Amino acid sequence: MKYSVLDLAPVPEGSDARQAIANTVDLARHAEDWGYHRYWLAEHHNMPGIASAATSVLIGHVANATKA
Image 1 (tube, one colour):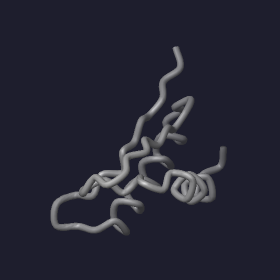
Image 2 (cartoon, rainbow, N blue to C red):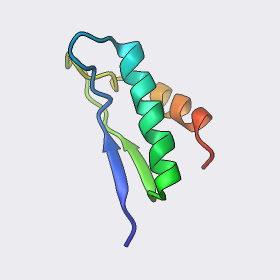
Image 3 (tube, rainbow, N blue to C red):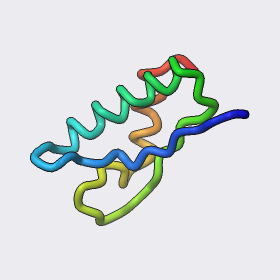
Image 4 (cartoon, one colour):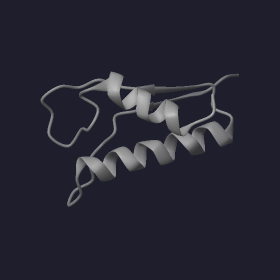
């Protein structure tokens, strides 16, 4: 069975979008190492606490930081 990860890129309380993006990259790298089949990024606009409003930019950032 193939498993995937769905990431909202949440901004932890007391943190900022930069840290949320760093957390997303870290999770994507781990998911890749753990053998997950796909890494999905959810797109949500105008939601405080979510750093994935510009998914095309975030996808490029994650893709640049991973191998697959």
